[in-house]
Image (cartoon, rainbow, N blue to C red; front, top):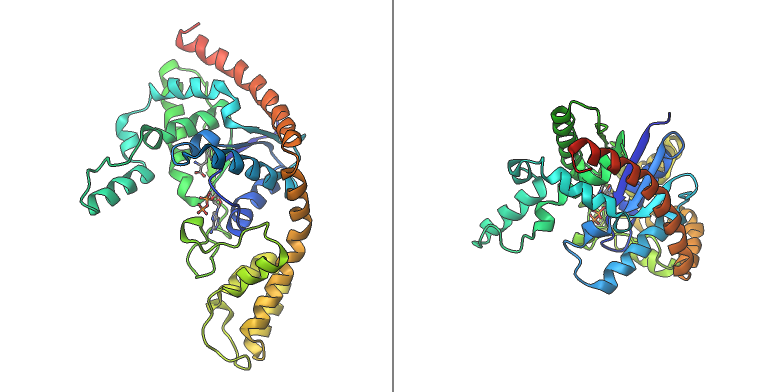
Length: 331
Ligand code: ADP
Ligand code: TRP
């Protein structure tokens, strides 16, 4: 039987180049060798997105993005988390086996506490229970579908380890292999894609290159990549250039080497380097951009794709949950 890969995508904003190369592309590549489950983690987004229209829009937008980059909904089970009620029941079961101390150790929760303390506020200021119990819902997402590997960004590694801990605890209690122990999988090479200013590309820093801009605004955005003040004629160090570090992600090793040599030879100005990056990127985004727009213009079509995924996911989930209930004495 093929191993299972599963990951959730939080619909919190406009998708950017960092999301594509850091999450979407590696996830889609896995579909060749794994049985894949991909879902929109809309209920995870609710702990921060309190605007109904924004949540709806981002949910569709993320779904359309994955499809536009080639997710095959026949091959992968592709669904919205909120449409699988069994996941929320499992989350409660898991919560009953999760130490409060484990949740206290979650990085995201600890960061929020630290920020509040630093600002002289109550440590729990603005922290809702959705944030606090976030890792339990995530464990339910993962354990429900017996995922073997979970492709995630480095910031999510701890959450996958929590899922493993909770699973082991329950397996041990009932002396049964109820839950498969998941492994996090972190794409090393593209771990941190830089943004326009050289920090990690992230919507929280407003330094992203959004994926589906028109050509003109895309070019304008690329022109904002920060450079030093070297003249066009001067040789440049590719390893010190944000343009190069973004551009090489689109190239084969041989092409990247050729571009490296070009920077080092001198005669390539920053304007030219940006133009070449724009051209490479735009060529790759052209077809997905059209497909994305087509999908976004047809919400009913998009919903029907997600409904098929929901039916497949629920078939697996309800059978699995039945087994868990029986084991724990609820049925
Ligand atoms: P943002 O930082 O813009 O809020 P998210 O946290 O929503 O982005 O990112 C979703 C996923 O996209 C992350 O888990 C990570 O795998 C990937 N990702 C986002 N930004 C980057 C980046 N700069 N480099 C590599 N991967 C990224
Ligand atoms: N917490 C993940 C993030 O913030 C999203 C997510 C929710 C997820 N459930 C998941 C990822 C299950 C992997 C597996 O990006």
